[in-house]
Length: 474
Image 1 (spheres, helix red, strand yellow):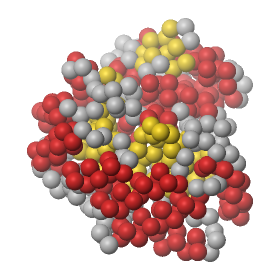
Image 2 (image 1 turned 180 degrees about the vertical axis):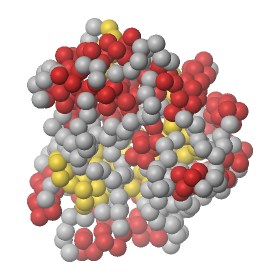
Image 3 (image 1 turned 90 degrees about the horizontal axis):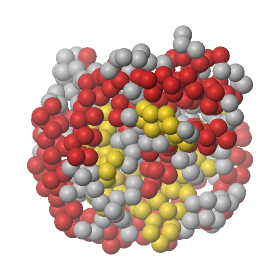
Image 4 (image 1 turned 120 degrees about the vertical axis):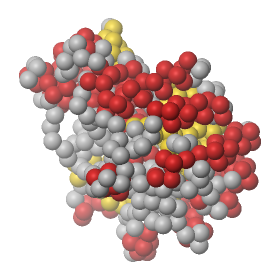
């Protein structure tokens, strides 16, 4: 499952990774995000969680100008460290919660796809955008990258070292699932240079897993993760989803106990977001699955998990991510939140650089044809919003638990005036604490982080217009 998809599932994330991005969206008002003081901020602050994509307000580039723009982007050097994202667009099964399934995994497709990736890396290696400054984090996502054969994964990671200017301590994450993965493959990719394994568990409850389309039973997954930890070659983290249909409080409680008992380096907690018209939404609509919890119900589950894990010695480093090991840096995800340059490789990978966003064409045949014809195999090319830097600063600050209001004000004068009534309201309602130049979300505020982000983005819009008339309570 992709980083972008996970972001949309409530991780409070705005990562580039893989995903479709509409260029424009309707304007929002600051007044839309006031909450009733006196309500339970955890469960009642908002009716539903909003979605605040970093591409909101992007300006599409005309098709006839795409090649020229992309040539300019790759010909322009970087001054700062970047990250890279490699996409593997194959899945062994179509999980019920996933809205971005693309290609059924076939083992015979793996070697040719890795060949394509290595060819792309070699072709772009000397481009100033790629070669001019270091890369300190690489994320190999999907799809299911771990489905690739061990030899193919190893030569892909070796290719990263050969063609990209990786730092000596570059974090290289391989995303995967327990099915089709084993300790021998993990050891081989570690030998090649992978430093971090991110396993999409979602839940250890076997019956819930079966309904999602996961193949292995929960105890089998837990055993595999324990074996990866015992191998001791990489950081090992996993994802859990809360609010799944049929997932009981005892299921979730056991999930939290299990990640602690295994000794993982980190865990990410994602709220379920059902895609309208997707397979899970259809199953719920037809009565084949029970309805998932409301947003308020999800909030209680989230708060309980954070409280229990921190009591067990875990450190919350972002809205959704907790760590218990000094070797878990979560570097790629943190960098993406800050809006750094992301270099995309592979079908469906999305990236950004020099004020431009784009996604590589995901259809494999179309992509190969475009390359053969000398065309840039990209789509969705757009200029980032004018307030992209301020947006990234807001998203990263809320995620890290401390938003620097003065820093945002320095790049968007008028922001603090525009959002002052909103921040006062949130503080009074229990969504966070305002102190000097900083705003720190509470646990309730962290759960509703996408709504807080949306409200502050409305403040950016208001400041950009030079008017704060939208700040009053409607």
